[in-house]
Picture 1 (tube, rainbow, N blue to C red):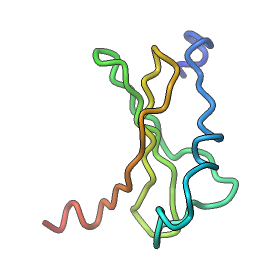
Picture 2: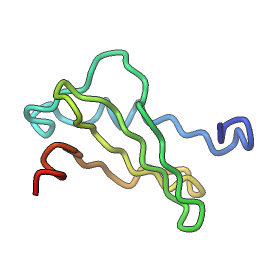
Picture 3: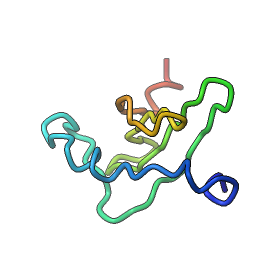
Length: 86
């Protein structure tokens, strides 16, 4: 929806995703050709968390984007099953 509000804030994360070594993803390879499952925007701090599904149920590769600056800050793997098991 944000791209309809201000298209200047759309950031292509594909080059970043392509640069992540497979060894870094370990047992969490990205699903090929699948768009993000969700984008969570924090308007106050200026960050997007873009959730890409991986080949494990309820697990995502999350790419953190500083949308006002137009740059990717990094990524992490979010395993919801493990997070709620603790």
